[in-house]
Amino acid sequence: MSLGLGSRVLQVDDLQLRPLAAADAEALFALFSDPDVTEYMDIDPLTQVAEARDIIAWAQDLAAVDQGGRWGIWRPGAGLIGTCGFNSLELSRGRRGEVAYDLARAEWGKGIMSRLLPVILDLGFRELGLRRIEAMVTVGNQRSCKLLERHGFTREGELRDHGYWKGRFWDQIVYGRLSD
Ligand SMILES: CC(C)(COP(=O)(O)OP(=O)(O)OC[C@H]1O[C@@H](n2cnc3c(N)ncnc32)[C@H](O)[C@@H]1OP(=O)(O)O)[C@@H](O)C(=O)NCCC(=O)NCCS
Image (cartoon, rainbow, N blue to C red):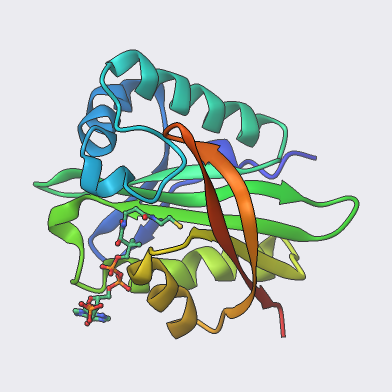
């Protein structure tokens, strides 16, 4: 039975989380063309809307096979202010998910992701029955480390040259939190 993450809408106070959809391409392009936002992400700043369409298709494909889900974060009057969700879900040979998130630069420092992360964690642990939620953080992304540590994640180790993007290898920190 499908988890239905591809059609699940979440409301958190004034913020609406909607699964990324084809119509969001322009808004996602605006978000991910900002080099401040993508600095520690595994993508180059986008230069074409087609790249945003590819990301949306990737997210939709993941949700269709219950291997992830990515929501756009919408605020009335502001439009798309970020995204969050699961980059991966492993439900048969483990029960774990990898959480991921981003906000437009103007939205940092307001506690927005600190409001949303507990909702995503609750969905993962309670509804999806995950045992473990992990996050991969590029070394240097202090804001992301602080966010995870504030929400009960343990820094489990550092993977050397774990990723390759923007023309070079990157060390990544593994964070994990268990259901109990
Ligand atoms: C990672 C990211 C989402 C963190 O955003 P953030 O705004 O720092 O995170 P939070 O929502 O937890 O907000 C915490 C900040 O808001 C402040 N804040 C203000 N009001 C707050 C409130 N009511 N509750 C909590 N924090 C509040 C906190 O003091 C803190 O600021 P500080 O770190 O300067 O002290 C953001 O930096 C981002 O989008 N980066 C680019 C994409 C990215 O790297 N994603 C992660 C990949 S692993």
